[in-house]
Every structure is written in structure tokens, then in C-alpha cells.
Image 1 (cartoon, rainbow, N blue to C red):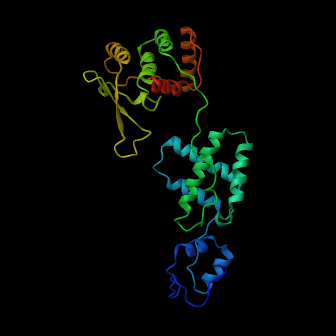
Image 2: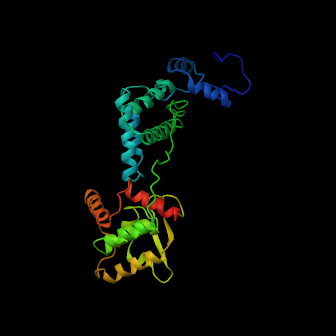
Image 3: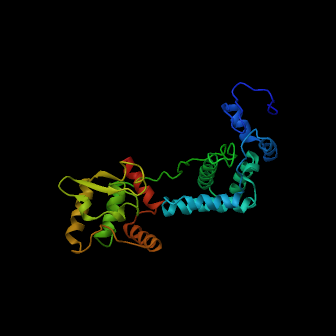
Length: 290
């Protein structure tokens, strides 16, 4: 289709600047360069097009994402920073092409990022531009063809029950035993789930944990989950409960990422167990295998 004919066409009814367009024509209009679209809107054939440039759009988008958790917003902010580093802030959104989008992904790979990080940024930018489409700021997103999604971990380390027993014995106190136990025997996320647990969340009679789930709480019905307490975890929890100070509500109060890492290394060394990568994730995956 090169341009609109002055004669009425099937699928298009023109009254002033109001049109009823079929899907193909709507997409053709959305993909038109600004100059051609301006000519059509200038003679009343189509509405005036909304337009914006990259910098202000990214600022507006981030300001509107008020419901995001801090970590999610931080990662999204990293993606917008990558866009602004590669593209000029005054780049019109409609001028961005799939070829430029592909070059941006190649640039991410060349900057030394892992494949998982590159996929994360590509997934984020798709979300950003998918929001621009319904607002009439772009036609077809130039980033939609980029490869994104999760990357399977290459780590296959399995922490055996015997190793966990040695680690538990090497822990300096009950709280550290609880932390390792929750990750190993209940598959809880550390620290987002383990550090939210309070003693009322432990149902000793039923042998269940009521686990708040910040990662999935925005999905209705997934604000928390019910997790069984295995016999070994029950022993650890009962001992910790009996030894806990009267006013201590939370099961785990251990803080400080760097300090925790140093302490864990010391515990593993004391236990005579080889250190494994991705500490807590590996324990969770080992729990799933069990």
C-alpha cells in the first residue's frame, strides 16, 4: 500500500479525521515515518500523531512504575541506563529500528555481560517499549525480536545430606543451624523468605511453615505458602525455639551480606566441606532434588 486513495475503500470509513481501519491498515499507519504521517494528518485523513524521544520517555516510564519492589526497580533502572549509554537521549522512539535494537544487544554482549544479564536487559526493554505501543508512541516495537528469557544454570553441584549434617554440626549457634536448615530442608529463599519468618509462622503441631512470599505476593493467592517441616528441620527448629530469647520474634536475624559470606566460608571450612557456588540457590536446588 503506497498511500490513501481519495475514493472510499472497503474497511475504511472517513468522516473528517475519524476512520474505521482494519488491522492491516492500522499497522501500516503505525509504521509510517513521521513525515508521511504528518502529511496525512495535515489534510485531515488521520489524527495527529503523538511522539516523544528516548530520554523523556524512559524517565516517565520509570516514574510510573511505582508498584515495583526495590530490587526489580533497580534492575529496570540498569536497563534504562544501558539504553541511554548506547542511544542519544533525543532519539525519536519511532526512528528506532530492529537493526539498531540488534546492535544494542551486540553492544551489551561486547561489554562483558553474561548471557543471563543480556537476556534480562532484553526482557526489560521489551516491557518498556510494549508500554509505549498502546500509548501511540511507537508502532511495532523494534526490540520485540531480541532473544530474552531465563538462562539455565550451568552449576550442577548437589549438596548431599551427609555434607549438610557436617555443616549443621559446624554452625556456631542455633540461628545459623536454622538458616541452613530452612534453605536445605524447606527450600526457602535467603534472605527474602527466611528473614521474614516469625515463631507464630511455625506450626509445631501440624508440622507446617507459613511462609510469606515477597517474590510472588503481587499474584492473588500467592502471598504466602504452606511448607512441610521435615523431621530434621523439626529437630533444628524445636532446639532453636527452646533456646531463643523471650522477645525474639524472628527465626533469623543474621544480617550483612559480606559478613554472612565470610561466616559461611568459615563454617564450611570447619565442617571440612568443599565450598559450592551460588550458596543459597544451590541449597534450594539440592532440596528440590531430595
